[in-house]
Length: 382
Image (cartoon, rainbow, N blue to C red; front, side, top):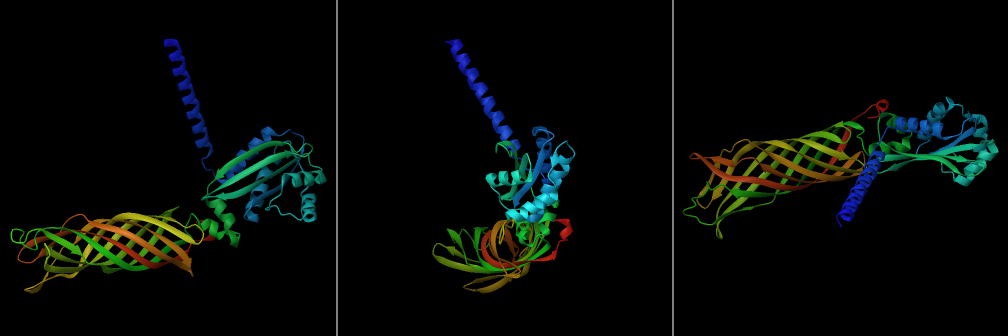
């Protein structure tokens, strides 16, 4: 019985090792490479896989841009020419393309490719595709024997966006949105937004004597907030954003159902935020977080039954986080934004000494418009 259990345990361990190895290989295989790395690895594979002293024709690479197709075909040809493989004359290939009415960047079925290969006198044809998958690309290259229509070899690589690929897209106006999908095209973005905010306040206990007024509670009153901001892309999907964010805090202090006083003050928040930005086609998605400095604008207004008075309140610091969604309209994006901010400390009021007012936080939903400025040089691919 012990031996049987031991064998079962060993089988389970071996199965786990095989599963782990399979997952590891799969994850490794999915690692994105540059377009040049994908071409070089494909070339090495084909040189090793294909029989030498054969005539080859590279027919087409189906992709969204002719420039990308031509680049892959030219680079692959350069690699394969260094081996003992022989290529169909380029002039004959161009004539067949015109006769068959297909483009090197268009789709060609395997049956059609085999038929074209026979017309060219090729023994092996190479075709493939370069297609967008999410924010990356999938390059697939296959070699087919003309006589038997047998697939002799196939490679598939996940290709990431980088300078070379961006340069290829820049040459085709129809492909600009593809580069925009993961990279910003401008060096600077300016935006403005305004919306409704609601404050949440933790009573500091300094406004009214708790021994006289029991069960004190604070109710926040919605207010309008507005902001101007500048965003600077610094790397891939990452940007840094600074804002001038004017906010109003207004709340009413109650003792039971009795209103004791109304408190209102304005602040200028200056957040410095790290922002993740993704711009798929005509949309933009953003998420951000960071710290802010909150400067007093004027004085705090405290109003109760016996009158009202002004009080100084201090500079505060805090944390802010949020996200937004936008749709391209005109030269920029119409943005919807929601955020949450909370002070690190308690707001105080300076009258008859320093009195704790409340610890504040607020949530704001805003609408705005964002526009890109200072386009990046096309040659940079960034």
